[in-house]
Image 1 (cartoon, rainbow, N blue to C red):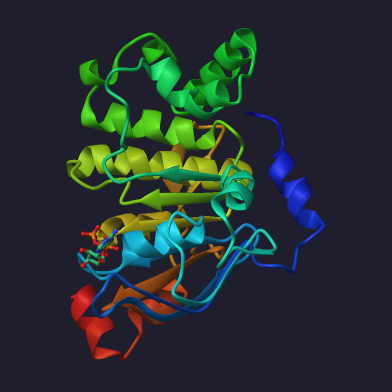
Image 2 (tube, rainbow, N blue to C red; image 1 turned 45 degrees about the horizontal axis):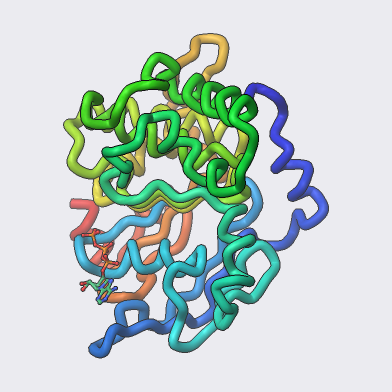
Length: 277
Ligand SMILES: Nc1ncnc2c1ncn2[C@@H]1O[C@H](COP(=O)(O)OP(=O)(O)OP(=O)(O)O)[C@@H](O)[C@H]1O
């Protein structure tokens, strides 16, 4: 995992093409639209931080990005394929090229950390020795090699979240979807998770969408970079921001804001202003 990313080479061929794009997507569950005309794109190497209050459709948007939920109308183009109406058997290989960190991490408590992280590789009947080395590599990346044989129940909340991130990274995804990765964690532990996400971003530049309600997470992502010499996240010089990290803000199923940190903090939109304040 310390090599230059294979993902980046893959993307060079399609440098101009978004990794995922929503075009006027509508979804409802027998009621008002939960996604109500959502359009946006995630370009190669882009990190989109998705902000918004509880219950406005952020998780539904993430699950629609990798085809776990199908749009009622509109299009979702994932890795160059229109997945809006694809059958599960055609969707599955595409979904495997993405990695998702579910809310609360969603680990299997009856499986060891090794088997949680390896879950997909086990389904694919990858040989045990290869699984062990790939799991160790992923755990090393998140700083948890020592938990290989443990069960999730013996880990802290922050450690469980790290294991969930290792599981999402195991197949070197071309798109990462983080659903409230710091939800329910205390501020200090949240910062360690954001540091890990920034490390992943700056090592691999894997395009991603990260859902959060915590403004602090969103700003930290934008104003910091991972310094591999120091092995830690460091603040960018005053006034500088990570140019590839931008924001989406949702309310009531609609994207109300799509742009940079600078544009976000200077937005005149009353909802955005209220959210920021
Ligand atoms: N499978 C489903 N069936 C029916 N309703 C659903 C389903 N999934 C989500 N919803 C509804 O869609 C709305 C948006 O839910 P969603 O989980 O996307 O919100 P969210 O913005 O991610 O909230 P939070 O920040 O609390 O996770 C909610 O009213 C939720 O109850």
